[in-house]
Image 1 (cartoon, helix red, strand yellow):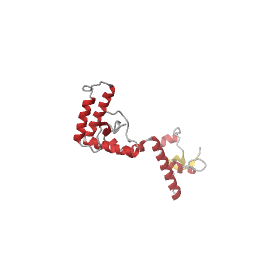
Image 2: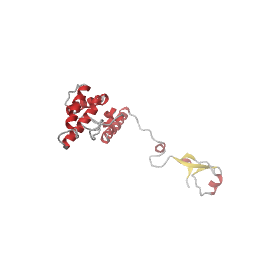
Image 3: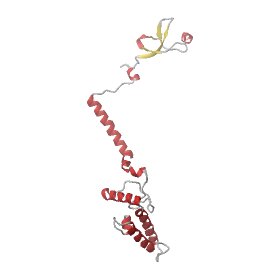
Image 4: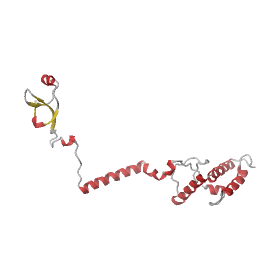
Length: 196
């Protein structure tokens, strides 16, 4: 695939005037209305020439194109989505480039791939677990975990204090004394609660 410079046949340090002169000569040669031979190849060549001129005549677009071309020469690829060429947003080899923030932060593209995220999360959790084990940090138990004895029964249970019997009882909404007193329910050690 040709770069825009190769499409127009100009050097990389060509001036705007030189690019304009070469573009006008090529347009006369390949434009569908002025060309002596009417073919699909000429039409496609004209579109490539127009796209190349649109990029190289605009200072911002040319600067961006030069950066992409340098990146391609270094890494062998351009790091943005492929699309159709032939417009002012074309990359050096006809790929449509994203504009704005997406182009500026193309380095982050690799982070958002699912495989990379999975690898990153796995390494992160492994690192945290290793550091915790090296430092001797123990997991903090939740309230529910602290409430459970080794035999599986809870240390604390819900109970209400029955003033008539002077003891803690488990709530029984069907009990007449429970409904009459409408007591407050507390968490009490299992040993203090009377079993029914």
